[in-house]
Image (tube, rainbow, N blue to C red; front, top):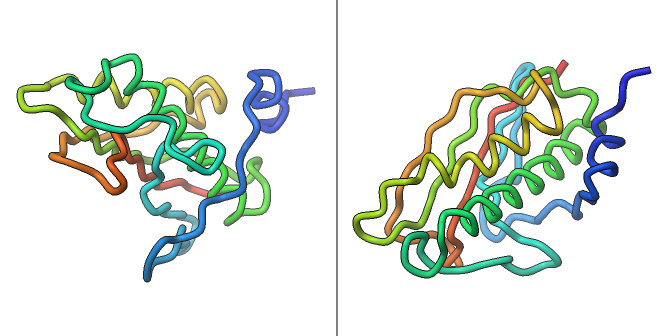
Length: 154
């Protein structure tokens, strides 16, 4: 029998957090048809940011990748809240990674790999997606990374 997404996460030692509630007048996710759009997820772990600052100044690429991975974990928490079951994921269609970047930093794509690689590791082909990686001057709460996703549900 094939391993479920929840079993794969447990094997990796990843426990999904309670999905973050919106901090303003927006929804944490919105579904239309078979598509689920998540709001941007920050690298929250244990109720606080796991790191802060600009990548390329306060954090190196590896720390940025860890932050992006945490964002992807939080995306899965939102998908589970929306769909009720991670097995309803048909595929990740696209993610956008926003990277708070020091002037001159040009490796946003490498930071975004933290989210992309995690999703493929957990979901296999269902985790492969189109992607944009964008450098930003700053992000909410001084977060180094924010990631949003479009997911097709079965």
